[in-house]
Length: 149
Image 1: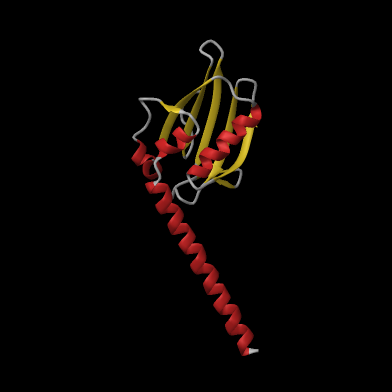
Image 2: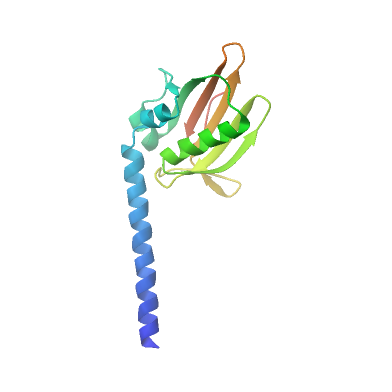
């Protein structure tokens, strides 16, 4: 009996150590991952008046990028998922409207968050399309977007 208890305690401690290492590594990855590379991998051109990128994961803010042409609803969802993944996060929910797509996600790599409907949110993405200029605009807010899109 004592052997089973010792084994259970050892497994529990090991799980906590793995969780703490994962949290630490994710925060390190997010703080040192270049946001510009994540946008470039998805052919997004960063807007010149976006928030200072190195401070984005520490203080929050917004970045804006452009992509020529329009995206299908499935491509918009895939883009949101890829951008969230670049931050070490996951897409939690998305909503589609006639004129825009909004997605919410969470990463443990960013220490602050907002609780919305009981879920932790610290990544917010909006995708809009301008028919006149044939351009898709992507807004990424941390923890939430605080601008019109």
